[in-house]
Length: 127
Figure 1 (cartoon, rainbow, N blue to C red):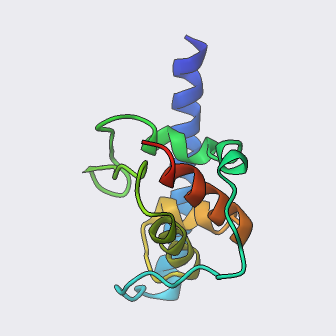
Figure 2 (cartoon, rainbow, N blue to C red; figure 1 turned 60 degrees about the horizontal axis):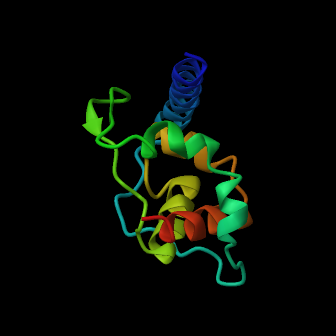
């Protein structure tokens, strides 16, 4: 029961962050739809550190075939096993506004370059 409650609370927190980010993105105008910006090359990801930083990720990306209803109903992409470079670049693109999904913008703005590299290393090595 506690595990289910934790997941519900985590999803609510992600949605709240997304609402705040949506307001910010709308205020700044529509973000460009382009390829993700490259993550800084000097940062090296650590998968073990990423495993300790993924609490905001697992609420959506850790549930097989999960669909969310914010901002629209869609299937959440599977990120386990994706390229480390791709994950870091995508997170950086959300942080800079090149990608504009409200929840991901809100989450990524709280991540440092090292956090993004660690999460990318973790998910790239997770199958």
